[in-house]
Length: 326
Image (tube, rainbow, N blue to C red; front, side):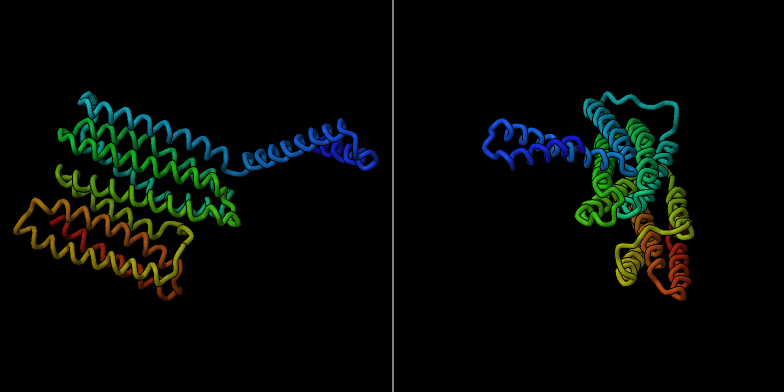
């Protein structure tokens, strides 16, 4: 680029002396194109060498492969040729899938935060996220292979694919953001991708919890609640996007939902026990969200308010736990 710029300036100086020399104008145009192309190449090289870019590319390739694998499994399920896994039980596969989906859910906010302003953490976080998708696909296809209901099979596979696609969108947005806090034009796309991932995680968790209750795995729901509770005490929370009032409002909404569902569970335990599984699933999802919002609220609250927030959440955990063991 420097050599081309030098030649460009020398040619321009020659044209000052003899501006009507057509060959010199042609040479000037050639040098100008070379300088322009060199600048573009330099910008591309700087962007590609930025922290986290190589890891984003590798993670994108990984998840694209996982999406192709889930599509192949879907085709096999449609034609009823999906081979059942005989080396492991359905319950064990459901537990693996639940654990993997939860871990992916826990990484959404850290990846989003790194993509918007922590370039040094971006590569590590996206690699950590992508690492869970191969076991996600294996567990999801394994669960599907053991289900007899075709609609249930397609629901599991479709929701798994949706989660992978939303993660892919997140990785593209994270790569574009690059952990640059000044790249504000990319932040909306990152936040949108994070929201889509959260919704995908919530959908598949509801389906998993409903399936779990059907095979006597309600204890796994209690474990999910306990794990969400443990996250309250883990390290530095993700960077909040909202205010304390926003998270307080969300906490109130989920707390009320838990109370309403718990009351309904008490009624259904007498009138319609078959519906308890779905209600227990909803309580699990609401409590997990309550724990997440509580953690963010604590990060934005005054020190004396933090203890009260944690006490409220700890009190709420008694409600779903008692009814899940009911």
